[in-house]
Image (cartoon, rainbow over all chains, first blue to last red; front, side, top):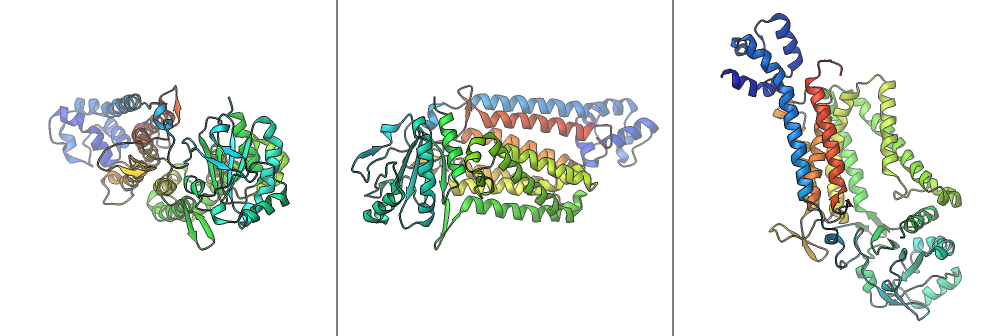
Length: 239
Length: 251
């Protein structure tokens, strides 16, 4: 590696120093004593001027390589620019954080029609629940308070009842007991459960005014402070 | 994808479980590597627990300070165990400061500590990839390549697998052992291992972010994560240059 001509010495200087990990010590040693480097016997066969040139080069080589790497990285960033539509075009088949919330149209406990499409442009808290689920029951009063406080600012709250896993009567009793005033859409055919991945209850989706799923919280009960902070974030992002 | 691990009535969030396991394995690995990196192994767990503890505290306070109204209405929210109510930036600053103060108070070498904790960070980086795989986050852009995976009804880049592969490659490259030529040639200066990890991780992010479909964009089409990673790469290269070529022994 180090037995070639002067030009090879320069090219391999950085590797040489890395190999021996004593760049500075070697440099100082050579400059001070101007005698052979005892750690590498072949090194001493080169002329003094070769050594002086070689000592300066490695740092420059590293600098040039670094700049080249940064330039190539910047070019790559430019070449891989994203089309703003490539992520948001077309609703995904299931709800995923960062992607548009899938369409959902359900009949509510009051017999009205609730459609996510109809409330597009407003921030939405979409909660999936069942009356037999203790954490669902525990967090519902906080959800009602948040709805009461932020409804006037445009926040939509809907608690989709997992009707295929529960009874309508139990849902009605729970809603009456807790005086819930937000819509209770009924998942009569299990579509909402499938599309919104109700693998565990409660599951809560925070959907922005732009229609994108901002966050998903699986499990509960959620702290009221968390609900309030998420509601404020969604409202702040409203155009 | 396995976002929830259902064990009877217990629903465990798989990504969180993976991150806890990765932290545990990472700390264990850091303890094994610490001695050959010039850091007292017995201080690894102390350093980690102090940093994590203050990091969590800082992250919660940072989150609360940004949304004071929510916590004035429900002050007990400060004490709840919701991981969603954490501000990562505040947490990182608090963890870094706490770790720094711990090292200074105990007269421990900063660069050797960073080199040792790099083992934890490397395993954690791979763990984050596995967590993304479990949750379905950080999903790839649509593609027709032969190794595409079917996710959310479309053939996509297996971006989470790219992430895991990159993290493991960096972990192996920086493994402090005699058989590793990089260790013998480059890593025997304090601080180099940490800066190499940071630089390589940033470089992999610059490259791999291009295959993701969940990128946050700035200036309409530039991926924010790539730009941030580019700056981290630049800082790492500068720090590496100083580590290799500085005349000052203690620099």
